[in-house]
Image 1 (cartoon, chains in turn orange, cyan):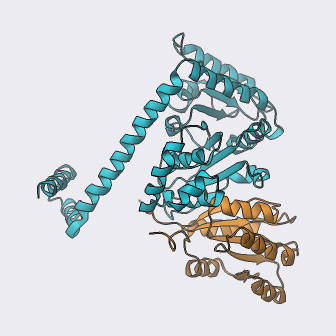
Image 2 (cartoon, rainbow over the protein chains, first blue to last red; image 1 turned 90 degrees about the vertical axis):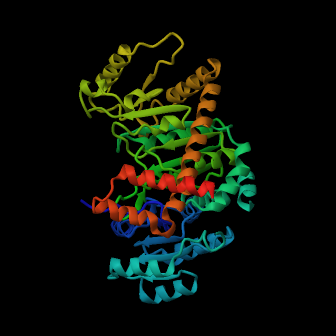
Image 3 (cartoon, one colour; image 1 turned 180 degrees about the vertical axis):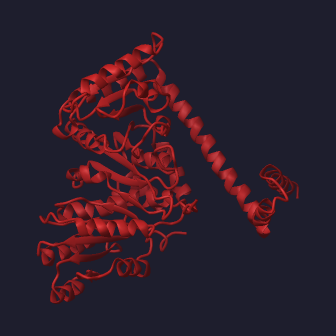
Length: 145
Length: 317
């Protein structure tokens, strides 16, 4: 026997997305699963998404956070482009984080380009979940109720 | 009220935000919905249900494509299950539909079922209203992977489609009550697999056993390979035929009336429950009753009676 979770609670919504042409999504799936088990509602984009597809998906799904996974080396273009498109859509209240094979120097540059956090290889799932709990709030409450 | 105004202008961001407020049951959402309601009732609503992996999302993807080609705007509501333990969910239906993500005429929204066991989520009725008020012509509602008894979709869809795949059971399944009774249209998907025709025959045999009156709709069966876009034009034609049938026989209007009644009763039920629980929780009364239940000093029926008496006293004073 097991106690069920309270279902009507206010949920954090997250888009886990795979921008660009790399086809490696084991990491993205593991993150999505960890977020699910942390009680978040997780939309997974699937592979090979353009920045435009990712941003439109985030808007339609009203997510609080976009988690980008990139192992192709194109993160320096793809990640900032998504931040840019969010701004253009007046949706910069959606936070963007990224992970994958990303050199530390690049991680610093990405942060100045508006990526809130970059999770490098070796980061534990609990670190990512804890960071998310501490830094992401359901953004529809700030302005309402 | 700001959101409702933007929703009426078709604004995706406002609609998505309002859907969020509805899902989380924020009181402010009710005021917005009041404004939207007079602008609803125009969209045609198609339900797609069937077992996990039967191709519902892929079917929705090709249906979006077909309706877009004929110039219709499309809303999609895709429901996936919430974890009963963590409350979290993976919403993965739209993976199959991402080619439409940059089409302004398509609005796809994933919902988690949040403890609802009929194949949908509690917010579904209002999310349909919101997409309807945005001006979407067609709204496709995809249920969670449904087994035998998840039939809530019939309360929302004008046309209910049940998807099946070959090789998932023998004739006894077609005798059972539940999901196979609700279809206006059957789709035998993955029709390139062995057993597709046998399944079609089983379904035909099942339908022959039903005593349809002369004015009743007889469910149609279509073989499709959604992933190869095969059989889809015929399916869309079948959906239009069903709609024409509903309109011509007056069932469409009767349906709208019944739907209005159901919705009113549902809203009444939940507002009454909210009210009753507020009063029951005052001074931890409900908790005290639970203590009495656990120690067997009372029973659930007497405890509920006590709460109702409390409510009546509240009315008098």
